[in-house]
Length: 547
Image (tube, rainbow, N blue to C red; front, side, top):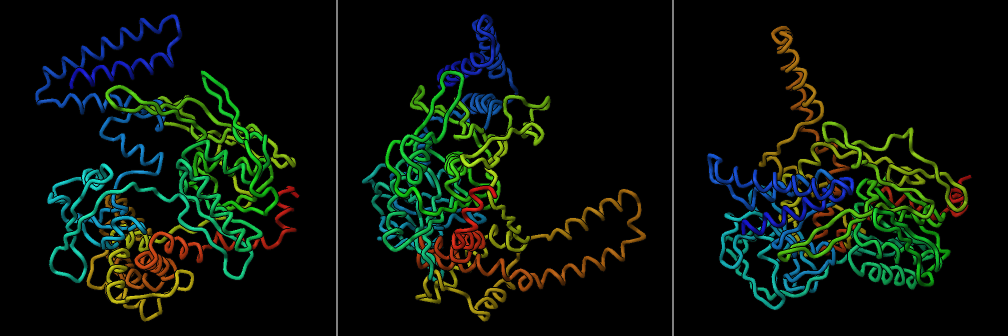
């Protein structure tokens, strides 16, 4: 095994040196540095005071080497290949459930309809205690997730602790081919001729799922479409091309890629699904890569109004290929450019600072480009929306309630006491029900500090360092007490943030993934803004003309 990891290191080092060393010196530099690496590895392995795990040490070396290029050039060992394939294809062998870790518990946070977990009685909120009679408390989350997945047709046994029941419940599932749904929700906005469709990732064939959703909306009477790409990290470039083709005609350039070894243009290949339907696209800071291709291309052709926050800014293209010993490598091979010619890559990994940090492209050197109708757009900083929305940051208490699992756990409590709830679009906790949650929290310890508390702590440290603390200690104590009193009223002050989080989590217990998405989108300020734009076509066309 040691020989295998050294061979792997040699090959990967070769990739780096051949990429950055002048041709005349490459072979000498490669041989010299590989000799240094191999000799150093052997010396450390034989002389270091403690036993060294050679696999782990070389893996750290590989990761550090590739991270010096960019975060997207990766080595994927054999035991991680299945997870990588899942991310890219959206398919795996499993039972159709996902888990999260809350404290030291591994709990089911989603059960996907019509898969074994759903059919055989696994519930959201169940704590998984054992897998195939193995105690999960002795495993990492990654290890337990791998146990859940496996060859299609094989059986997995699960023991769960369910709220309200003292004994463990033993369940058995036969693994099936699981297909992650890239379009968790599409539906009509009540009382409107506007359809909304959500795309969460660009997995293989996601364009087919999206097409079905849009066609269904049009059959239901949709005259306008909202496409939600918020939080979509991207994926397959070809899927982005196909999705753009829904709205622009055949033969149009969608994106071009330019790298060391090749330049390529991707054009639309078919007739559009609807070339004229008014379209609004929602993006935010989590919209990246293929999401930015769709938003940027349709913006360049003045085909859609882009609404939300500036996107992530990932303009790099990766190629993945099988590697030795059943592993994979994923290498950045090119940058991509939208039809107007702009590259939206925000971080310059090629020209790092002396300390190794990466800088963004300064506004002063960003270049201007023009859309089909002459609107100005810019490179080097993600996709700038046509209508910028500044989302209010969540309060400290709302973040803490979510991260520490109290929102999740109370939804489980609520579901155990209510057999049915209203439809996602109309479900709402009554004032008395929200107060029940506040009362439930009184017996639990929520750990969080407000921004004021953090600033007060910093002030106290400065005062102590500068020897002012004795003279203001009494006043600081009074402020601390006042902050405690204020904190106790945060459930009321931030009810507008906490209550929707509770309602969304509760909705998922009854209506699963689609219901949770439907609830969220029915109460979404960005969606409301998109509606106002689409319902005023004079304003919509004015934005696309840039006037």
